[in-house]
Length: 318
Ligand code: SF4
Image (cartoon, rainbow, N blue to C red):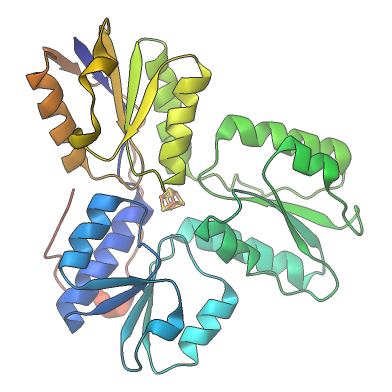
């Protein structure tokens, strides 16, 4: 058996920054550090931070006065931000700047009394945070997940409507929904640049390339990770068996019967250490060759909150 490694894969700049913020806050203030929601959707990362003193909570009311609270990479609604800022808390914002960019689009549209259609997955924390940026009394923000939702959608004033999307969607599925929205609302304003982020796009493109050459695709990522699920779906839609795994402990020998070439990738919240461990296990099971075809190079980095910049990076899960 041989393995083709997807490139790029794993940590994106937003995840790297969010984990770094929690690590530096732990170093600067000591435990416990409170984090609103899992800082990134990866079990290994969250378990590691929890062991070292991070406490993941859903409700700001659970955080004692005087504590440090960090908002996760997925972002929060304006109501949550106001609640935290109205308390005696030290707040650090680990929202990915590319999610913040979508928040600012929603704020601008609501300031102009335009209604907004958000394409995203109901219940995902990023979607909750983005819905919670809309504040116009004269309109509404509508969530659509599918073509059926577009068919049922009723906008008050089709001449004043704008579109935003979740950052980690399937590029292909979203294109279909955008097309349906443009047919139904020809005046809909779309973002200047895509809301789907560079990391999501690059990881999906890399998996598409792999599916031309593999019998099976493994995606290292947690079931809660939106972008990891989308990578698995890309392979499944092309009739390539695909499995989402948290690590080597989830691998099953029977998956590999008759398989010659395995494609291996990792979602944007999955550390490279887990990919290494999966490779080690698969070598024990008969993989003799690992190749990494050249992919798009990523050089994106995001700056840290200035109060945390002077603290040394002391811990890494990469
Ligand atoms: S997947 Fe994209 S939007 Fe999400 S944290 Fe990474 S760079 Fe930011």
